[in-house]
Image (tube, rainbow, N blue to C red; front, side, top):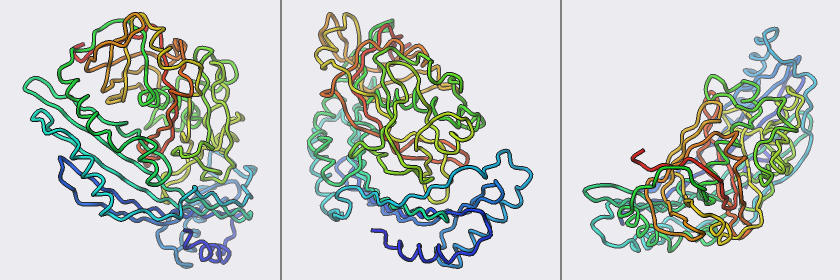
Length: 480
């Protein structure tokens, strides 16, 4: 842990610079992946990566340069490249950052259990092979996979104002999936899709009930193969947590990113239907909608003490009782806009600069049990586990598809339907939120695949949500 910490601090202290301010952000990341496909072990994958980003500020102009050469000479050369860039940009900069405050805190943020070593490759392949063997030998089950990825991430942030922030986290990404096919159709069912992820170690597999799930997943794939298509029309919609997190991500998270609202992402990731003047009064959803930025949830994928610019992270309501409160904007975007934000300035690695990103974005639980949610629906459909998504560049008009659907009639769960899809407008959809599940329906999940920025950055995002009911939603099947 932090193998280079003392060395980096000495080398940082020895750097020579005429900048008003400079910083170093070192990232060391290792990843190991194990997969079994159709009961056959695949070659394991091991990746190690390390480097540093040097950032300077000169007369209000900020610039940066990255390097994988962590020697004294390598860091000095990167610092000088950043300084040269800052001087070249002088007079052409859109913003004068001279008054932007510097972080000065010192902190160690180490995930509980991080120092405990993981088992070796043989152990994980034995576990995955046993899980794969639980999938029945049925000719209609044409494909299956069971996988497990561990990523260890260590980061050290230093600056000329005296800050020293260290972070060490391990992320666990299990996957289980089965595809069933006959001469008429193919249907896939997975456990969490790409949303099954937490910080931790081997205990995450027990927490998420991954082991022992393959047989159920295979059975549900066969059920989908035999099921009728989802009917078309307006119905109440019960979204389970594994679909809610996609809904939150696309139609709350991205529209509330402050750099997007300010126009920075227009060329690539798009804009937002939210405007700067909307904060504090815009009715984003019904009074049941409460959404928080919460970096303190144990085990959630993006829990941390400070963001990548060194800002201390605290829990804040983004939407409270349905009313929009604050954006997802880090220190720079807050300074530019005059709006309060959160500590969400994040980078995907050492060779990318921090930008406004989602982190832990959670929908707070309500007061309804799962049985009460179902019991309150006269004509509706339950949908679970995202399989497709489409949303416009302002993050407003959307169309999402799920793996699993079940009809709800007169307060009772009925038969399975396949190809369940729904569509709506973000600014109206959340106002149709009619019931929110309690803590017993609440699940902590996340995704490692949130993309944004130029050059592109793919980052880990945590989401947690209860099951939720939405009234009068346009639902349709695969034939629509």
